[in-house]
Length: 291
Image 1: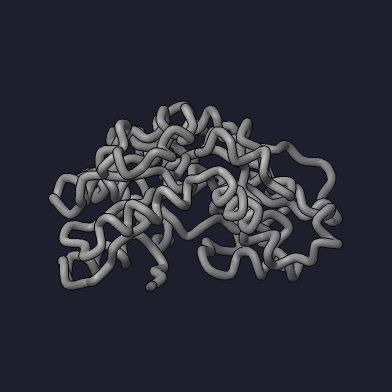
Image 2: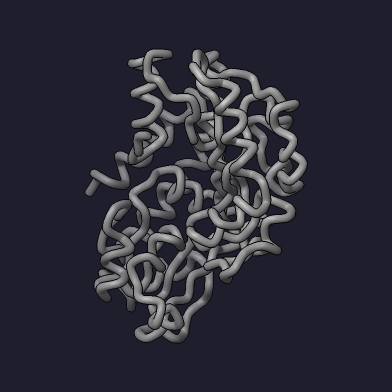
C-alpha cells in the first residue's frame, strides 16, 4: 500500500510503471478517473461481483459525471473543502467566501495551495462554473483572487494549514474538516466553526481497478466490502464524514460528522479540464509567483 500527496503524483507513477506497478485498487479523484478511462488504464467493473452497489446514493450517482454508470469506478467518498473559523478570536462574520476579503484579518488567514480549489471558488463566486474554460472568465477569477483575497492572506498553504490554525497562527483557514479536527483536542472543538460555502467545488474519490491488476476478483470483493453499510459507517466515523455516498450507512454511525450533507448538495464536481488545464496553470503561476 502506498500513499501519494496528490492525484498528479499517483498518476505519474502509474504512467511510468504501467501494469508492473502491482496495484489491485487505486483511489483517484473523479477528474483522474476520466483521464485514466480515456487512456485505457482501467479494468471494467463486474457488477455481478458488486451487489452492494445498491447502497450508492442518488447524490453520488448524480454527481459522478465522469462515470455515472460505474462502469470503471465506484464512488468512495463525495466531499468538499471548506472554511474553518476560530470562534474564540472572531465572532462577527459571514459564513461565505467574503471572509477572505476582510482587510481587518490581513495576515491571519490562508487558502489552500490548490489551483482547482481557489480558482474554482473565485469562478463560482462570480456565477461561473468551477470547470470553466472561458479565458475571459478565468481572467475575471484571476483579478478577483489577486485584488480581493490574496492581499489579506498570510499564504497559500496545502500542508500546514491545519497545524497553523490549531496553533492560533490563522484565525480563518481554507481546508479539509478532518485535518482541522485531527489537530485540535476534542475538548476544544466548540471553538471551531467549520462550514462549506454554497459556492463549492466537490471532489469524488473513487475506487478503480488498474489495467492488468493481478487479483481482479479479490479487488471486487474488497470494494464490495468497503461499501457495505456497516463497514462504510466505520470509515465515516473515523474521518468524521457525513454519509454522502451511501444510503444506509448513517444509521450505523456512532459519531456526529464534522459537516452535513446539506452543505454540499449545491456543489459542482471538478471535472477533467483536458488541454484547458494549461489555462489554469498559467493563471495560478501569475497568482502564486507574480508581484
